[in-house]
Amino acid sequence: MKLDSTVSAIVTGGASGLGAATARALAAKGVKVALFDFNEETGTKTAEEIGGLFCKVDVTSEESVDEGFAKARAAHGQERIIVNCAGTGNAIKTASRDKATGETKAFPTDQFDRIIQINLVGTFRCCAKSAKGMLDLEPLEDGARGVIINTGSVAAEDGQIGQAAYAASKGGIVSLTLPLARDLMNDGIRVNTILPGIFDTPLMARASEQVRASLSAGVPFPKRFGRPEEYAAMALAMIENDYWNGEDVRLDGGIRMGPR
Ligand SMILES: NC(=O)c1ccc[n+]([C@@H]2O[C@H](COP(=O)([O-])OP(=O)(O)OC[C@H]3O[C@@H](n4cnc5c(N)ncnc54)[C@H](O)[C@@H]3O)[C@@H](O)[C@H]2O)c1
Image (cartoon, helix red, strand yellow):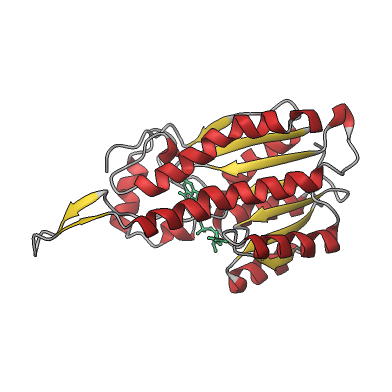
């Protein structure tokens, strides 16, 4: 798909990190960009920087997502692109014993469900509602109507200790790619998923220098964190290359995560 001012896009989680970098890269091509995020402060700031539209959206809420699509489409028309980056994680073991008290506990199911709701169900909700809108778009060359990019994680394949919920949510996103691409193939909508390794976003900025150094050292090459612009470049390549469909692709400097 050719990227220019005739095209509009939605980026979920667009206030920060990988989503913000993608929103910035799309805007630099002239694309009209709407950001869906529940962080109003960073969302408004990012939208202002790129001349985009901020929509306060919680991807776990049906109503909030509907309102976001209505606001974005009223301003920019029906989107041809959605990039789903909204997501979060937690670090809890399936069962554990407190070293000090000896007390045992199980992973609280509500905290497992929270991550699934944000990462997996939230992503699917935005895919389905965006695709519904794309069905009414005029087809472009080859019958193309739209493109969906989702964000998995290398944790979908190499989930670490404490990542049961996060890895399951990201594994679900990875498994969605092919059936979504097949569901939408007759309507000219492509679907691809990026599995990032360790990227330098506000999420990782909170880690200590020591942790950051040890994580960087574990990347085969280049020995550093990924840059959000590198994620954005891959998302744009997937959007611009009309033959790229139904794929889950790691972007990770060759890293394979160990148990911890
Ligand atoms: N940074 C990494 O190393 C890395 C690695 C693998 C995968 N990922 C994935 O990439 C995506 C982006 O991560 P990031 O590092 O840019 O993180 P980030 O925290 O910088 O950005 C995530 C954004 O999602 C938003 N968000 C969270 N829950 C939301 C909800 N319910 N509704 C709407 N918005 C919500 C947050 O407000 C935030 O702006 C996430 O899905 C994350 O799991 C990141």
